[in-house]
Image (cartoon, rainbow, N blue to C red; front, side, top):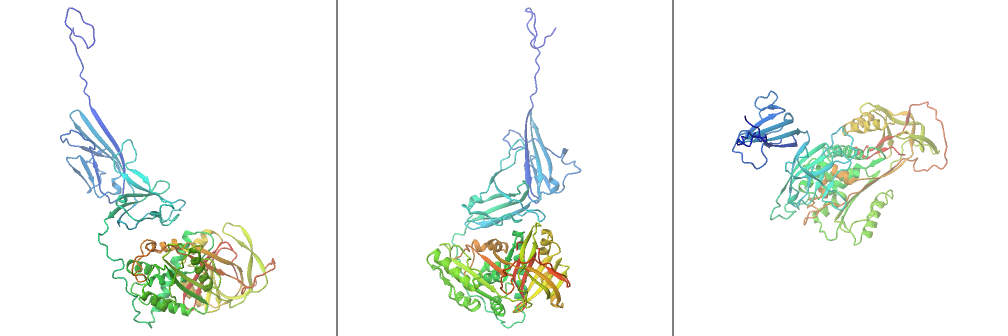
Length: 617
């Protein structure tokens, strides 16, 4: 009679013991979540821990099915290495999203790994930056999205595989503060969430992630820091030559070429401006900003020259741009005063050729800055007030002691209505975008002679007011007072659409129209630093090649300002009395007592002078 382990037996017999030997299967399992982008390469190790395995084959499954017998397996991009211990996927596509399982059995041990692969459609970039230089790390919200918060930037700090469904990588926030400007967001609250990385060091190399506030990955940027050259050449070597001579000063095509460029530049500028400020009053003088940039172009060389030329929409081989800018300025002199000036640090040596050409083309002899910030502030504001006939008297609040270069351009426009408005003071009711009603002084004429039409392309009622000096004021009135209608008109205001509108209205006969306009004064200072970056000129703030201006060293643009003023008045007569009237409509009417867009145009030069939006009279 046998006994089980632990049973009682007779003392007369030796114990017989039956013992169960339990087979111990040791199983190690790792689960990892990975997020990858299309086009990348991925290697998944079956065993990521040190073991004594002698090379038993591994078994891989994809979404529960053994690989090699799959009907849904992605083809042509998956292979195995080292007896199946490594699964290689290259290039990765959206079809590779899913669950990958691997197992290896040897002796009494089984090791398994599981990977949850998510292939995202984020933009992938590789950026190379030379040590000590600056570079842009791109990131963009989808065009259809509304930007309510800035994207968040992170840097990958380790690639260790973690367990328990945690993130596969450690990310650390990238600091962007006023005190540390080494990393800066170029366009806050914009669809373009690109950042700039300044003064790159080797430890900046790595993978950067841009995510929305909701956690969606918008872009992944692999950043490579390259060694700086040991013996850097003189920064202006080969670039310190004067601007090329215009070989055909009397060409009939040069003027129209510049006009086309100025119109295209103007509409691009307004597009960037309205996108950064979707509501509220706007006013910008494209001819003033183009004048400042073309003056700067006179000293730009290399990539900086190409960037400025692209920004103002002129061809790289258009050597007559400065001569044509001078002709344009002279052509508009009857109604538009335009002046340029460059102030520079006393420690800087401007090239003689730049000074000569600055006087030749822009009637501007560069002037040295003074010793103190207060003196410089007063000098610059006095210059601006003098050139704008005191319309703008305070452009800058202070001038930094570190300022090396300031480029200024001022315009002053004076145009009289060819058909006069009445002198009697009147008031009307302006309807704002939110529906609020405000009483405003108005300009009124019962039988004003003008050209008026409904422009189907722009989806707006358009009126052309003739001004003295061969100029025109176009007012574009959306079909309703809603913000959506106003934005639709602005979106349709391409350079082609505007030129078609002007050409069409030039063929139309004037008619008698009952006109009501708000009497307004717009005094708007725009953030031109953002506009300059939007125009593709971020390099001006980082490492500008202005060797044609200063042949000794590279310069960095510190700040840029733009302030515009425009008034609609009855020949400058300010009304004193307040009168409420009701108007009879015996003629067609044009009433701009709701948000509208205005375009001040030089008919003689065929270029835009001012573009604006009125939502708050």
